[in-house]
Image (spheres, rainbow, N blue to C red):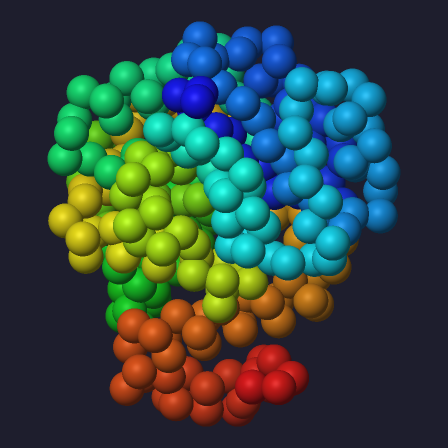
Length: 274
């Protein structure tokens, strides 16, 4: 049994995936580990490229586009490590980052999962942690994200200050999330009702409900080219986001679900079949 399994889900992201794997190969974690790539029926030659260039990486063909949650669960079930790292294919991991995350997690028995500070290629911060999603929290989170992106003084400063302090949070981004296998399995792994988006918030909520703590740490920084996989099919990506949003409210805030559904229908954003 290895100490760590790194699970990467990929969908038509060959260039990003190869860059991600290169960052791991050039500066591998000192912790004994294995890397599993779960490919969601990519048409860009990703599986063959990985098998050729990185023969030590396990490639699982999902057999279709299963979404993030189901594909991640496939990768988890194919491994037997004490720790699991969910890692997006559009990330680049700097030297020592994964080992540092592991050190932080192992030093704090009460912490079940930890996420790093995420930045883009220009070093700009990504809002990658927060409070449990609810209608008003979601609105506030969007204000923070857009305010930071537009450099609105008060909002941008608040986001930057919050991201400089290690803190317990309700969720951290699944783009780079280290979790103990025991807590992940106790949570039932990722809820496969979420095809894309919100599965990380839901997963962290389940872990917290079982008494585990979620930690954000700025002591580790990972580069994230956010949204690159979805950019090739923006319409289907937007529909997947809305379906996951509706599923999240149906599960966690059932009284708000019909309100959200009506709002999306009025705005012409209700996905087909909903």
